[in-house]
Image 1 (cartoon, rainbow over the protein chains, first blue to last red):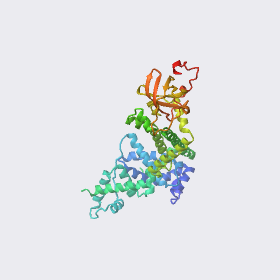
Image 2: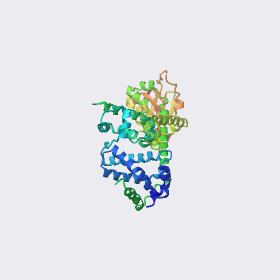
Image 3: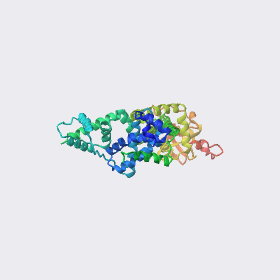
Image 4: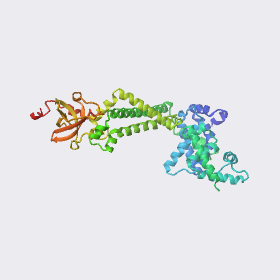
Length: 191
Length: 262
C-alpha cells in the first residue's frame, strides 16, 4: 500500500486533490482525513444507524471521486465535501421517503462550552445534565435551524463555509442563524 | 470499522475494480454552460412576452370599450394582458432557477437575481418591441395559435360578437363616405354603415382611408344577415395575422356585391 504514509501531512486538501487527479491511490488520504468528520456530521443531522452511515459514506466518497474535477478552488475543500455529503444524505432520505431527524448522541465538553457561551447557560448545572439539555433542545429545533446550529457551533464553520455547504447566500445564513439562535434560546429557557 | 484503514482501502479498491474515472473538467464546464444557455433562452423568451405585453397594451381605449358594452370585468381582462404576464413570469422564473443552479448562483440573494432578471426582461422586451418583434410575433401567433383570440389577444375575441353589437374584421374597401366593406375572421363579407359613427371626445380621430387592409372592430347594431350599423370604431393593436386570410380575399373570390350596397 503506497499512499498515505508517503504523503506529507502538511499538504493542504487542495494539494492532495491535485495528487488524486494523478493517482487514484491518493484518494485514500482524502478519505482518511474526512471519514470521521463526515461520519459525525451525518450522525448529527440524521438518526440513521452506524452501519447505514458507513454505506452512505461509501456512496459519498465515490461521488466525491467522480466529481473531483468540479471542485472549485475558490472555496475550501472541506466546504465542498461537506456540501456533497449533505446533498447525498438528503437524497438518501428522499429515496427512503423518511425525514432526517437529529440524533445528537454526543455533545462533548468543548461543544457544550461553545454553546454555553453563546446561549448564557448557567454554569452551576452538572455538565452531563447540561449536555443532555442542549441535545434535547437541539432535537426540538426545526431541522433547517438545527443544521445551522450544528454547522456553526459544533462543526465550527464560518458563515462563508456554511453558505458554500448549504448553498445559500451569506446574508441568508446570517439571518437564518439569528432565528435559529433565538428559537434555541427560547427552548432552553423553558423549564 | 470506520476508524481503521480497511474502510479507505475498500473504497479505493472499488474505484479501481469498477474502473471509475473522475468526470473530465469539460463535462462540468459543458453542464454549467448548458445551464447558463437555458437561463438565457428563458430570459429571451420572457423578453419576447414582455415585447408582446407592450405591443398589445398600446392603444387600449377604455372609453370605446365601455361604449361597446364592456363590463368592469371585461375592461380588466382587455386592459391587462394576463396571458402574456403569466408566460413572461414562467420564463423569468425558469431563468431564475437556472441562474440559481449555476456554480456561483447560490451566492447571490434571490431578490437580487429576481429583480435583475425582471429588469433585464423589461429592458430587452422594450428593445425587441422597438425593433418590431412584438408585431411580428403577434402576426405569427395570430396565424397559427389555437384560441389566439381568447388567450393571446382577448380584444379580438371581445370584438367578434355581432349579436352583442361588436363586429371585427379587415376593412376591404371604402364604397363611399357612408359605407365600407369588411371581411370577418370567417371570410364573411359585411356592409358596414359608418354614417352615424361618432368617436368619443377623448379618442383619437380615425380616418377610414388609413384603415383599409387593417383589422378593426365596429360597435353598433346588426341590421341584417350581412349588414351592420356602426356607432364607433376601434382599430385594435395586433390581430393582423389572425385576420390575414380575410385580408387576402380578392375580387375573384368575393361574391358579387348586391347592387343596393353600391
